[in-house]
Length: 126
Image (cartoon, rainbow, N blue to C red; front, side, top):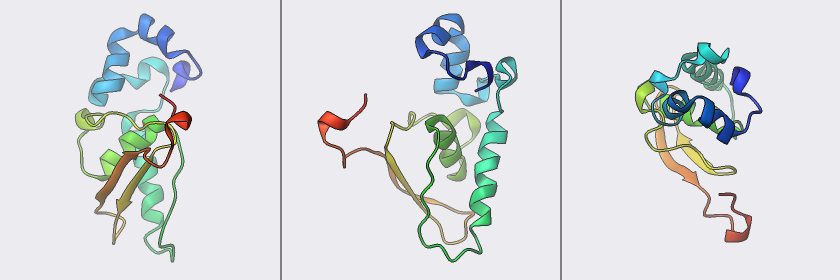
């Protein structure tokens, strides 16, 4: 997130309302360079390359843990969505579970998105 890293969301939204709207709603309009941040293309390609390295692995199940913004964009990109639609289903909640299936590490099927049903209400972060 470049110079936005570690900043309070409320502060960033008050200073950069249009940019934060783009970040939350249409990543194709988010200007990462303005914040010295990694581009959407770069971050999603980094994850895609990691996934492709698993193609010849014996692993049956892989758990990826990461930042919600990166995972939201990367997962939706793997599913074939264009940059402007990567946030269409919203972002991932903290500690949520999303499940993708693949046979070839190139084509993916979404099995579960942003599931927090395993948590009881007292432990959910909203």
